[in-house]
Image (cartoon, rainbow over all chains, first blue to last red; front, side):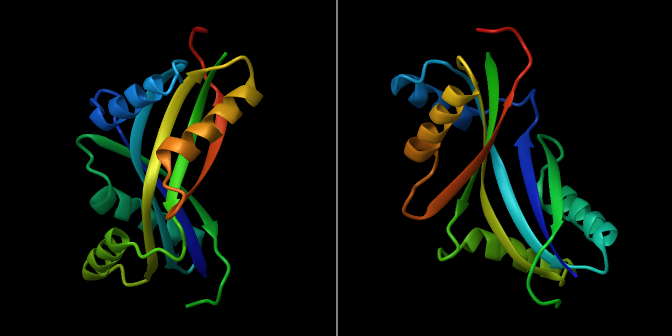
Length: 88
Length: 88
């Protein structure tokens, strides 16, 4: 079975986000003054084959934990769905 | 009312994603050979105040279109939800 995982990697609340601050300043300069906060993270789409949703979920968890997110400063969450296309 | 928008900015299908290819190679080297595809994009959280969901939605659409995504190579989608906290 083929699965698609959408992983969101975001900076922890306590970590400063200079890129987000820069976007917020740019928005205020564009007269979007009502934007109170901007935080920028990564969005990663993984397509993988697995025997079932449980094993896919376990693998995505491990991949996100080991490779995609830096656990010192980032946290992650993900959604998993069965994807179309041929089984590989 | 206070709203939180989660914006996903992803490269269009036709655009090469060297960062995603590098992550895929790293995963294969870590014996996650069943990962078929990796695409990397941005995840942006915006907190904003607005009169109602319709005006918040319109504004997030405009912000994503003008500032967050490059329409030549990227597409975006977003979810909007009412956020807790005081009205400001």
